[in-house]
Image (cartoon, rainbow, N blue to C red; front, side, top):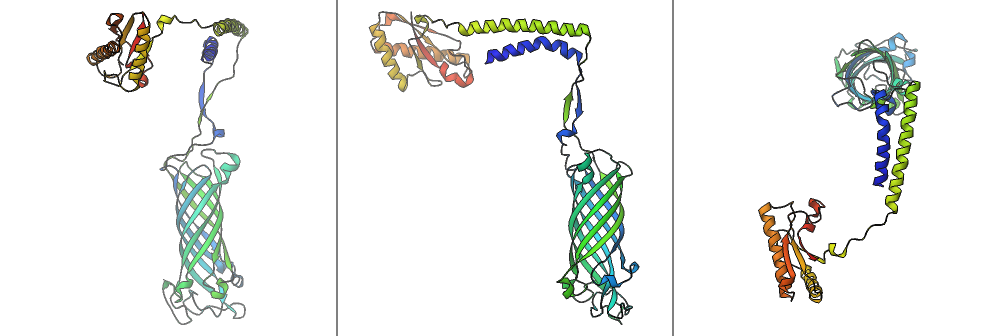
Length: 414
């Protein structure tokens, strides 16, 4: 398999010079691969807006249209986490104007007894909401049309929730003249509203850092101020429109992954003829290499002479010269073979060159070969048939992880 891969690499190398010299590779962003996430400190913004809203509870329809319009204002801090998704959180203010039934004296917010509506069944009311709000933002323009830096118009849909605290005039009775306080109707349990909101934020780029916003918002709010009987039955609608500005901090663009782009290949007739000639030459060389590879695969391996194979190899632990453990059994078996053969033997001492220094390794080689010779003589092998030497090279040359295979004494027939 390695030979085949080498063959393919060699063939490609014949074609690369002509191709690479004619093409210039460029690197561009590819939005089709998605967008990279920016750093946490990028894509932050602040937003402030103001406008009007209108209460639409069951009682509010009895009030005149112009008297139902109240001021709205917001301040947000937010961050975009991708070209599509972002979060914002902040403070909001809502001036709630409308009508309630005559029997509800709480939270009217008027200094004197108000005018009566619809034959005295209903009276106007006025109170203020201050609250905390959080929204999830979704950029519809980037979703439908693809991300485009510095687009003039972005359509952003959002949805969120808020908690608001109701402030009304203290003791709002016909003869009182109280100040604006939380729970001015002495019923603080009914002076905290929860609401859900959704809207369409129309953003127009003025500069790279500043956008002008037109926010079309719809709130669905708990109704506490109209009385407990209404709170248990309904949620009140509160649509509004707000105008404002957004200021963007740090980096506001998004980067796409970088892709290599090769220009379209164009060539003249002489260049085409040269390519054909190079291709034919490469095919010829491929054919020659395939023949050589086939012959190598068909060639039988030559058997090594018996004398080249050691009779045995005795292994030693690191930094030791004593024959230990199972190696003693191996040495016993080798001694029996040597006593039955009328031959001489060469004992070679080895040590790995990955540990220790030269002086230590030479001592280990000499000590190991001397130990093996002494053991063989003790087991009955004649001293005259044993020769010793040391080798400063590597026995296996398989690298540091296989150094244990180099700590040995080899026994070779002569």
